[in-house]
Amino acid sequence: MELQALPSRIGQVRRIVSAQLRYWHLDALIDRASLGVTELLSNVHRHAQPDKTCTVEMELLLDRLTVSVRDHDPRMPVVDDAEPLATCGRGLAMVAAMSESWGVRPDGESGKVVWFTLPTSSATVAAPSRRARRTALEKPARRFAEVGHTADGLRPEHAPARSAVAG
Image (tube, rainbow, N blue to C red; front, side, top):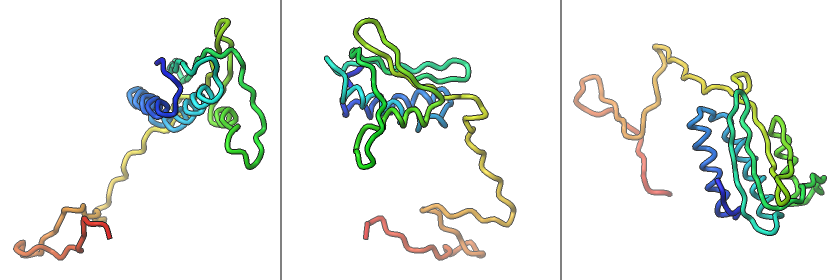
């Protein structure tokens, strides 16, 4: 997908990445992939010249998801140690920490591609756990609108008062 790396567009890209990963049944990767693409797009917004146009690509091959961001600035990013109280400067370090691997490569004469990979193997991506079965003695919690009946079946059982109004 090609876009302008503007703050208003970054949230849209996160939603698209999340939807695609759900489609691929890789829900366990959504948080890390969203964080990584947010950091890479933020770097394009902050540093890329002459423009903020970039392309985001996601590629799923065998047991590896690769997310890459291509921009038109040939300058390679530099990973610096951020000062303890700095409010920026940790993006690529976070990408490195949460990914299996990452890197940058030149893209022709006027650009670069920054990428990261996440493993998709079943050992590293936990499947959603199935709900445990209830024993015969367990009683499920009541839903908001559920009201039980007494043994005679005529009168409703007492239900705690609830208000839809805040306060």
